[in-house]
Length: 358
Ligand SMILES: Cc1ncc(COP(=O)(O)O)c(C=O)c1O
Image 1: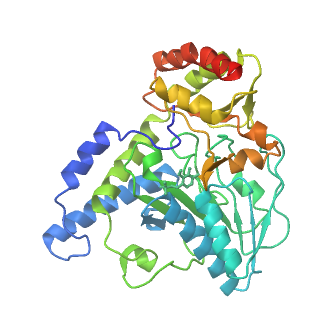
Image 2: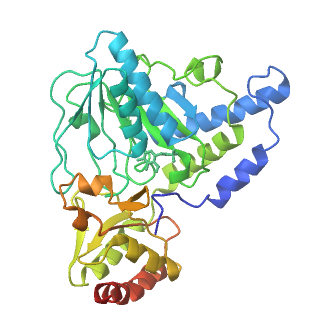
Image 3: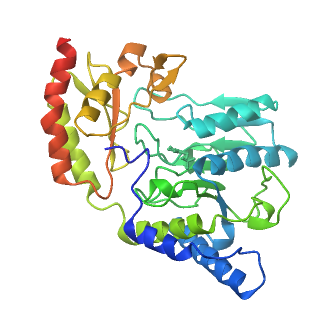
């Protein structure tokens, strides 16, 4: 129930990676190098196909965080250098990877403008000219799905599609930079990609090597990239499966508990995610109680100097701190079964009752 944190590596991905373990350096010109290059390029074509891009637009990175940094920081710096205003307009609900990149830009003199969000996490479109607009395709905690291109207000757009890819359609229409991460779609951790539309101005975060057209120097993570390629192929061919029906069953059952509510926008959501809250039951206690029964969920809260901070995303919806602390994210995946859902529903009412009674 925590697939938004990571997904299990698909067996077929693991097999493909094991076969790639002995590959050489793709930059080597000898035959072994060429074999490694072929494997990387085959994976690149699969990642491109997942989002309707050209293979030459895919820049492999060390994961979603680096892809976000390359698109946000590299895209905004390049935009400013090309004469656009030193201003970035963004969603207030972004992942910490994006928020960190925005903080970096603020330190470099960019004005960061956050658009308003309503109580369900629906966003207002950007207004005015900026070096870059930054809007995720899907929110990691609420599961809300956005038309990022419509929100960008005509500005160049970086779109974090880390949680969306493999779960809802992801395309490059109106998108300049798109961030992906392999481990959210059945691939390995530690590899991702920024898909950068051809001709869009982008500055690399560091320099020195020629790899990835100079946009991401360093010898490629060949095994990881091969795994990412296979995971992208499977996501494209097989889709998310039955997960929406199971999520709805879970949500219906949980909402039968008195004082239960859903955070986010049920009208436009990932099929696998429900962010629930049970009035009077702190999410941390719900999470720990479920953990004791072998059920993994997440609260989105952070532990800062010994105290638990409620989820920044749920707080940004305007909820009071005590209410925001009740959020618990359930995120299903390809391997989730009806039995898994029923096990959660068998445990949850007693857990909530116990916490409320304590
Ligand atoms: C929306 C979003 N963006 C970026 C990331 C970071 O990806 P990675 O873990 O590959 O660095 C995550 C991971 O949780 C995410 O959910």
